[in-house]
Length: 138
Ligand code: CMP
Image (cartoon, rainbow, N blue to C red; front, side, top):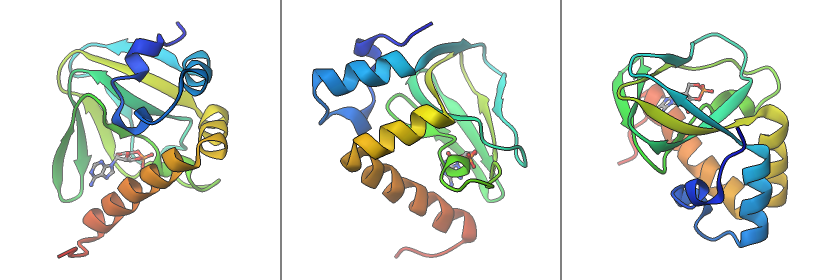
């Protein structure tokens, strides 16, 4: 199912985007609803897409513990940032979860056409890698 624009407006990464940009993302994204407990990402697999949380809570099982992600946050970006990268963690739905899913090609288009989104996503991604590596920010 294509994603409605109002769901995209709940993603903080997209707050600065105009209606045209949001419509383009909406046309490319799939609206995904899964029950509590469902696995969305398995460590070691190739990355086929990424997810933006619209409703509910996802849990990332990192080597250093669990991280909860709620509405406006995203996951699955790390394995899309390099051609041969694999998933770094398991992600499951903690509650019934509604997400917008972008496949690899749509992710490329998103970051190529929206540099501010790409920069903000990169900042989050680097923070996650640093956290997983045990690098102290501070
Ligand atoms: P990816 O490696 O594609 O699949 C697992 C996802 O879990 C990863 O992308 C990130 O989106 C997410 N993730 C990994 N580590 C963390 C972390 N420390 N905090 C939040 N999310 C993370």
